[in-house]
Image (tube, rainbow, N blue to C red; front, side):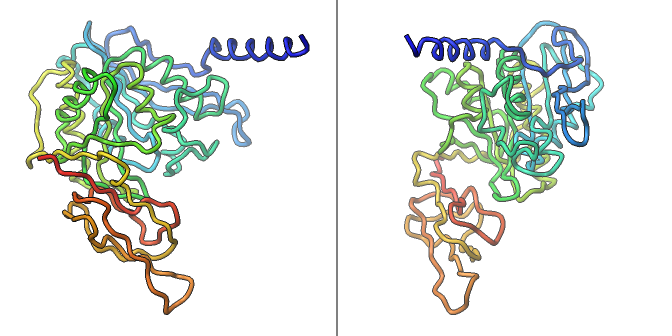
Length: 350
């Protein structure tokens, strides 16, 4: 009996936590037709603002009945193709070609986006590893909970635009995942193909726990993610891919009128069947690359040498491909640390 009270309190806390309302509020009326621009207002009391808030821009286009989609960028704050494409899309003033609802959050991890960092400077939490979130947690956890419990249940289709950020550079690809529900997997793959990137990837995640991807897919939604470049910047080419992909995705869902605008180059299909696709660095030092993005390699080919930068006259460590395939990701900075991802190699399907 002496444990009954603690167990009762534990269950009470768990149940009350599940039922607790999320503190985010917004001026957006999600049931109202028309164009609405506003904010997701996240309460945040800090040294600089006693009764302040994080104000995350949000736009909704709604025209009658039809499917709903959520489009997001800057899940990581140092990835820019998504925000550029989505801020552009939010500037449209006509929704005659839309039937249904489009909710757009160009920079979902807004504190990280403002600081140009992968994770939030407020709580040092990676938004893309904290789902489903907590309504009474930190700012990042609260954002994740709002998406999980408020925004995602509204929609059938979800597009989350990523790139490599400051530490990785990637071939521009749209991706879907292997799922237990094969009908859902096929629908996600079809939507990723419709996005119209130069590369189409069946993507393997090494640490899918807490990811936005996993949360969306567990709710049965049609989900597409991307990697459209990297290095902490963007280019006219990758921005054009993102803009075209946003339109294609919405046309594919049936929400927006129009025709699919495919990639001007034939789409290359890729697969990451197992962990051998990832090359993890076990040494700190200076990267001397031997391959470029898009290069075809065979198992055993030299990928890079890592030079010791703490002293001269040492033999560099050599890293080799674990499989045949195409180099689709590379470490962006020339200085690399133990545990960093050096390269990703995918099999070419077609």
